[in-house]
Image (cartoon, rainbow, N blue to C red; front, side):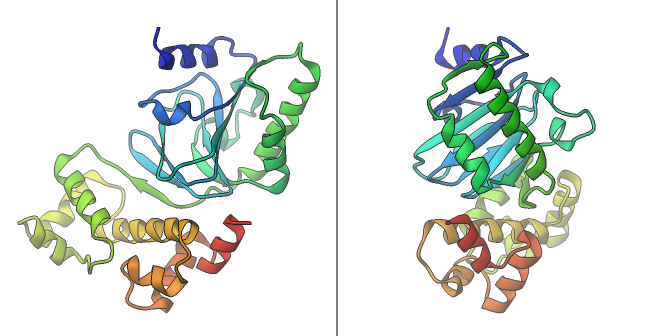
Length: 266
């Protein structure tokens, strides 16, 4: 049995217990799913949660929430110190709560972070027979329910359409360029109407919305990973003015670039 198969078997073996794992193994896995809900906190870096149709940016001081049965993989863009994973029995969560069905990115409060770190030596299944650990994780679960009301609204849709995937790659690699519809369509030898229809047919968002999200995600990465000024980041992300960048960032993230950098790096 491979390491991957063994890991998934360990997580899924007993549906009624918690499973705690502090390891980078999730970064090595292809698309997979578990029969438990998963909370994943990446320490010391930024990452992406990928599902078959979406890509979620995970900045510092946030955790991934992955409901049971959702296919996913986690990819880090930087060298991370550790990936903290807690897998929750699905029957512990109210049937009407969104975390049972919807993946997302949520803020890590100071209390939640301390509780995650407290479990760092628990590499095991934890059931009701381990009374203290079990009750501790029940308390942690209740805090997760409390903070997981408003997910970070930065989600990139994906597609299996190869023509669009080539367009996506070009956008990501040239985000500092003037990526209007006519400019990109010409690069791919088609009309702006054809490219617009390609987005309409395969995506939930328009070409311009997609470019805006990529610009914001790239800027979030730079806010967390570099010492560049906010003005420098704005221009490197394709904005021709600081005011336009700040307005769009606030509109998407619901925080100013300065607030986001400060709160995420505390």
